[in-house]
Length: 320
Image 1 (cartoon, helix red, strand yellow):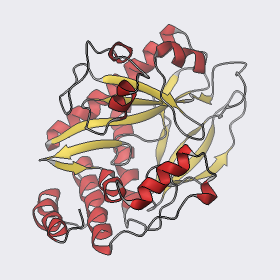
Image 2 (cartoon, rainbow, N blue to C red):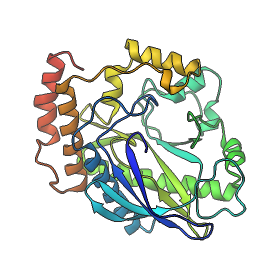
Image 3 (cartoon, rainbow, N blue to C red):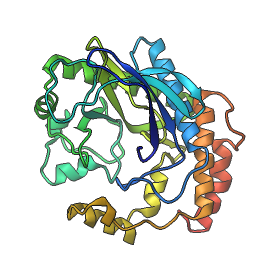
Image 4 (spheres, helix red, strand yellow):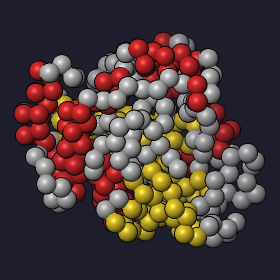
């Protein structure tokens, strides 16, 4: 079980053939690598699943391969299951998850990890394809394509493409192809966002190799959990949940626990969210799914009404 999605395996993959599995998207959420938080966000799982399915269908119409096989229910996504290889080099590069998270960045917010890595000297601007130190909240053209590990205890970013190649065993051609796929996905999400008046700030995706060794998109992408959007100055993503905790006592203790490499069962338990904030975030996910897919899946206010009425009320109550 993951912190947000549950996995049901219907057919195990073999060395040469893909299997079949189902993601069941729950109403759980996670922030700061903690795992399952104490509250659930009603309808969140369905909203993420519906947005993800919409994106996979549209991307496949554009000729981009994905692992998507269809929906079994509003919160259940069927997909091609491949092998996960973490402790040895594969005999053949096929029918396996690629051990990377690929991050596309159109803007760098004030708290971006990019600034922290630059300021600590872990990377230089040219490692990210930049001519100089980037500006906060200025559109990046072209976007930054960044890479981090997958399947490690904590994700870590790579300094440059040489490290990515060493980690994956891929050559320049395969890495360039992954970057090309990331740019295509980012462009698609940007354009859909523009149609709705949403600014796409950044996001992440995963890829796999199918049974023939060809790239296909994996996991899920273009949702409020994987990506961050802004709508008329409003942060449209699970960032609102992070922000509630960020800078508080619990967040500080969590970061200290990570630095001390404490086991997760020794991490401090988080306080619960205010009920009013939980209800608002629930409606935000549902309204976003309605607008992104162009279908009325949920009976909720639209985003404009939520922001003008409920969001302002949360601010007045000092909850955000």
